[in-house]
Structure formats: structure tokens, C-alpha cells
Image 1 (tube, rainbow, N blue to C red):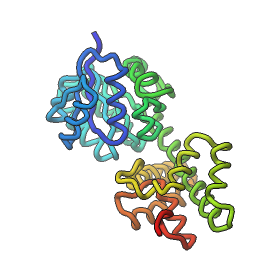
Image 2 (image 1 turned 90 degrees about the horizontal axis):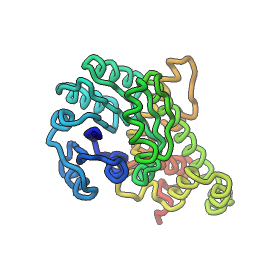
Image 3 (image 1 turned 180 degrees about the vertical axis):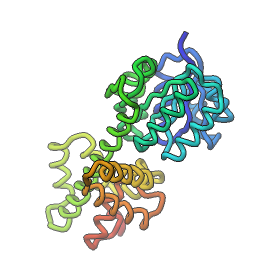
Image 4 (image 1 turned 30 degrees about the vertical axis):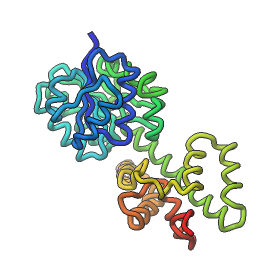
Length: 306
């Protein structure tokens, strides 16, 4: 019999991941969903079908065999896990898809195993549009038998590929995720500075974008498009919120310090992100680094402003 699944937390990524679990996960029973904003859970359940809404974390966890969660930061992850572990989780698999510090992941694993359950770290790479399309890259780590119970919901369901760390400590997955996210920050830094230089030097951002399209298709082109069109500051809801981007940057810098090295491009990116937060507040997006670089170069934050 197929296991009963539960999902906790419906941020930008979680909604798409739930949709794909329902559409492609071959679930025998409806997916159990919990979100602190209850209406968001009801709206998603109505939209995707084959889903039911729990009134609490404990209700969702008590009814499920495999419990997924994807939350914004380390305190939210730990507080939610504490609620999960107030139920009997003996023999269950608990899966964290969040981006957290590897030390947090190690703490989660210890908490879960003390209660007789199995823990799998499964952070994902990709933007919300990739989550919606089932094109995420899933990084899975933990005991092999537990990972094997989670893998069927990764490649081909929520994602297009797996990075499989079966048998390795769960913290290895979030270590890779944090380092990988520093690459995204570096990419946005480079694109932002390049676009501003192209505008101020007379080359023009459209001409630079043509080069990016043919030389760096994929994420580079997508972020370049967001910059050219003003999407980095005009959208109602950020795709990669400034506070979450700064959290990831802090994790990266802390890991570097622990390891006796530095990530200077992360330090530069975090400084730009600080300007983004000061300029547009919580609405800020990682792509808003372009606006911060524009301000540094004597331009307006918004490239569509008259």
C-alpha cells in the first residue's frame, strides 16, 4: 500500500511541489496539507484536487507516513519539527526540503532519530516556476532505506534530476545547497554589474542580453530578462525574497569562516542585498541587486522609472 504523505508549509516553492506530488506522485490517499495561513492551504487543495487540509501540524503528522516540509528559515524549521515530534513518529520518514544551515540539519536528524523515526534532507535547487513545472534538482541524503522511500517523489515528480547522497550524513545535502546558492548570488552580482556597465558605457543592455542569450542560456538569461524588464522590482511578490537570500548568504559566510576561508563574492552580494532591503523593504528580491548596483553607479533603483 502506498504511504500517506503530508506537506507542511506553502511558500512559493511548496505550492508547486505539492501540485506535482498530487499530479505525478501516484498517491493512493489525498495529500495532507498544513499551512499557518489556512486559506492558502484550502485554496491550493481546491486547485490541485486529491488533497485535504489539516488544522494543525500535529494533525497532519499523526496521519502521515512520510512528512515533508519546506520552510523559510532555520527557526521556522526547528519550531515546526518540534510540533511534529509531539506526535508518535515511530517508523515514519521526515523530510526537510528547506534551505538551512548544515548544523540545523544535523540537529534535525538527531531530534528525529531520538523519536524512532528516519530523517532525510532533501533541499532543492530551482526557482518557483521550476517547482511548478516539476523541474527542480533534488539533493537527498540520509540512511539508504529512508532515502529510497523518498526518491520516488523526486526525479519525475517534483524534480528533473536527483543528486543522491544515500548513506551520507543529511547535513551533506544542505552543505551542497548553501554552497550552490552562493553560485546564484555570484551570478546575480555579475549580471547586475555587467548590465550597469553596459548601460553607462554606451554598449546598451539589449546588446549585452543578446550575448548572454547565446553564451549563457538558462538561469543567466532568465535573470538578465528579469533585470531588463524591471521584473526585479515591479512584481507584487518576490521570487527569491531578500531576507531569505541574506539568510543563505550568512550561512555561506559562516561556513567559510568555520572552514578557515572566505567567500568574498558572497560578502559583496550581501552588501548589495542590504541596500535592496533598505530601498524596497521585504518586497525586495535577490534580482534587486541590479537596483543596488544601479544606485551605486548613480542611476535610479528602478530601470523603468521615468
